[in-house]
Image (cartoon, rainbow, N blue to C red):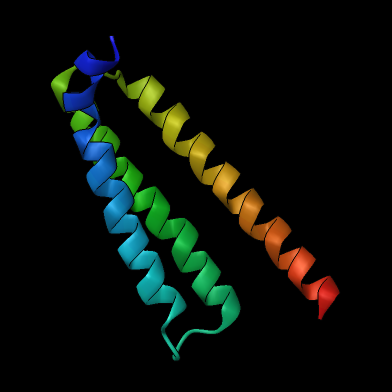
Length: 93
């Protein structure tokens, strides 16, 4: 069952690699302040995941409603984690 799902997950793997590269570029950018860097990480996550999940919708593996729930949920979770980390970081310094 897992072996059958591997071809469908290639888009998500490519999106994770692209998001990681985008996040690293955003975090290394001296022109962005810390809040802008974190916002770029979260919003680039949404952009890359919509592209990856769009490939799954195109193939018929995922329907549009599940796509919206998945992308929205994972983006909200990432935003929450980033917010909690920034709050924790501010209280330490």
